[in-house]
Amino acid sequence: MAMGSVGSAGLVIGAGGRLMAMEVTLGMLAPLVAAAVSWVLTERTYRQDPARLTGLMMTGFAAKMVFFGAYVAVMLKVVGLRPVPFVVSFTSYFIALYAAEALLMRRLFAGG
Image 1 (cartoon, rainbow, N blue to C red):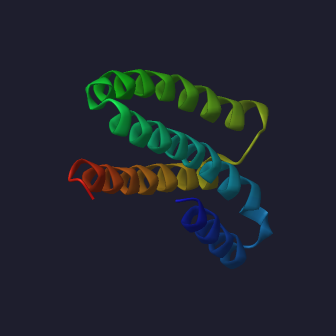
Image 2 (cartoon, rainbow, N blue to C red):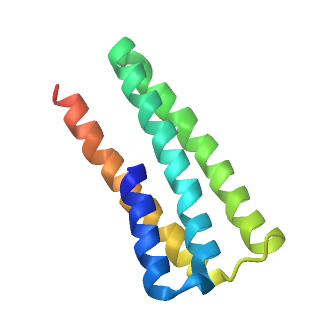
């Protein structure tokens, strides 16, 4: 996940110019960190005690709602990023990374 995210951000910044480097990078950062932490905790919990996984995922969902709301607000209001490139980057990485995490969970639950 990390290599794909950083690589694709580099390609977008290279193609679009340094003008939107901050928005693309910070739009990628929160979804990447959240998905990576979520995946590590999911895998570890499932291998140790699968019965605890649903509770972990519900707690994680609530924590991510608060985290993402605060993150977007801070990036737009405090840091002052341009909204369109930031939101496009954030949304694209959010969707792609959670799709990747879903595929990893499918493989984990299938015993792979």
